[in-house]
Amino acid sequence: MVLRHDAGGGGHDIHFGIYRDENYGVKEAAAATTEFMLLNMDWAKKVRPTDRVLDLGSGHGGGTHAIVQRFGCHVSGINLGPQQNEMNLERCKELGIADKVDVRVGNINDGLPKEWESSFDYVFSCEVLCHAAVKEDVFKEIYRVLKPGGVLVFTDIMGSDDASEKALRPFTDRNATTYMGRPSKYIQAMKGAGLTHLCFWDQSEHLETFFRGMYKQTVDNKEAMLNAGLTEKYLQSWEKSLSERAEIQNKESVFAWGVFVAKKMA
Image: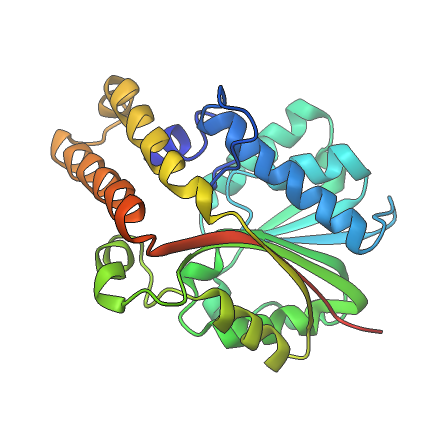
């Protein structure tokens, strides 16, 4: 609930955002990230209606919906939360794209289904790898399920290459993250899994603005979140965490974020 209001601004794109316009709120910024990722998918390899896409950590389905609506291809989602999956599929029915989407419950730390070997033309993922216990293993699984010539496009919240674990600890403790990746480490892990790294679009400059936008969303939507069952204590703690993230990013730039593109060469 809190992330739906904060990172998604009430929408289905629940991830960090790109501020192309000074008037953007978090909802518009998050949607801009999805748009940017779709462009990267299509430029890395032209997306066809006959292609299959894996939405890794599909959440409420914002990325899935955008992919199907843009390209007309089939998307399979895997996600930890059954309730989120239900919301995803319900929205697919509303959009008239239910025949193009399937989603299952799964944990990326348990590996991907064996039957998915060389099944997907694309893997799409937003802010999911930060929850992976062994990130190198997830890249190996992505490589395994991609078809030859398949493309990986993902974003993640990371520590900057020179940030200390101590500075990042409050974030990792709160977000069920064992440790935060680094841009250089992710590139190394992708290459180690057999993927060819194509590019990293560093969008870290937008993080402070987004943290502050999340804080504002929490304040503006507090009553709705309290009515939904969240406690005053929890929301106060969340507001404090967001404020601290914005301040440390402003002073020390300890967080990194952006869009990675890689390919499984044929």
